[in-house]
Image 1 (cartoon, helix red, strand yellow):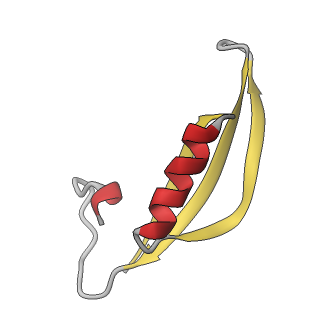
Image 2 (image 1 turned 45 degrees about the vertical axis):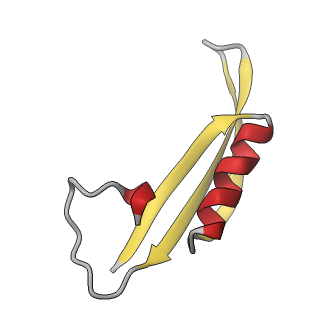
Length: 68
């Protein structure tokens, strides 16, 4: 099964650490990063999709994707 996550966060090092942590756990970048202005927070936000193949596991909506 292939899992998908969209990582989001503020435009600072915490977002880079979030993506780096996912990569260290075997996730792979999927597409280009995105960058947008959050008018409510008055700050820039980043997003990056990641995917991971997990053989022998069936999808369940209650699974915690970050723990895979």
